[in-house]
Image (cartoon, rainbow, N blue to C red):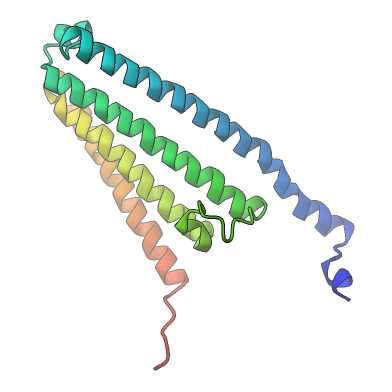
Length: 187
């Protein structure tokens, strides 16, 4: 009887199977993740080389009139940016695959991310919006650190873009809350 319940007709089976077309997309994001690892290692090597051999100021930073502290801070912010984008990729790869393609069957695995146990499309959207705000914050901080190099219009547009991300995330979270209000426990 259970076999009859799980049997789909040809058209529903084709439609349901089409979710596997997303697999190459997730595999491509894994390749992109690898490229971010290479980028991180390059930037880290550049930072170590600059600090250890040149006392903290690269030729480009010196030409731009940056102090060693500012140059190091901007490079570290770049490293943090790479890590945050990489975290975003993990959320999209793992959460998206789990939500839209197939279960990963990680229950009981010691390394299962806590958030994965209750992920769905709405939760994934809110987590992605929050991660984008974090990435945007890093970029905005870097912009203000080198404010003397940028015109006011550029800084204004970056600030407005960041605020747009914040408002969008709040709107997504509010819509999610309206669509699925919290369940009240009976006492």
